[in-house]
Image 1 (cartoon, one colour):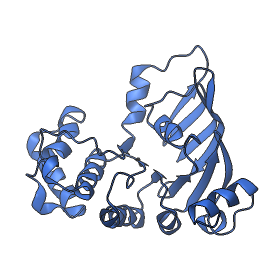
Image 2 (cartoon, one colour):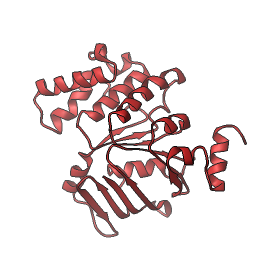
Image 3 (cartoon, one colour):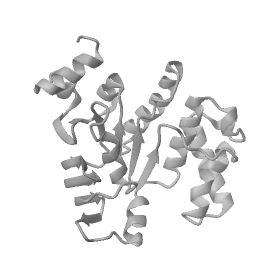
Length: 249
């Protein structure tokens, strides 16, 4: 369903991704972990072309893009692939002048060209799904961080993407609000939503992910099921990273 082959990305003379290869089946959840600066977020942003790879291939569903030096990706190609993805940012990125339900309706109307009545109905359904049916007329400043992030998840789902992308979805939240967001993501996993999640929440990754990759220095150090990577890592670097997170160093 999702295939990444020999993906490279540099910023100037700094190589951030150095030949990434990933295969993820439909309905599965991939967690990407690793230290700061390892390339996690850059990789995630390549999936919806917020960052354009320098080299390699990216396949989402039936859409494949080939990146190479001197070849510019056409806007139509980029738009087609972006429609397959929904992005949830760590800083919510809601429109501050629109209510919760208007935030979820916006892309349906502007991108999918839905009528307002249809977009409103879908937005209402999604707000209920994330536990915010009673907050549809609230503006972002009237919502807690956890509630804003749940609206952002509903907004990403509104376009019926093939895959949801999460960039540290709980990192901007107060600790007591993390659980309500993780609960929504766990439910999506149970329902078979394909997801790629950059996270520092190891317990969450262990519970929700089917596959974990550990990155460092722009490469994948280890990959496999969470019980292997998080419980029984093999490489010295992976052991060092996980021990540091658990306070054993």
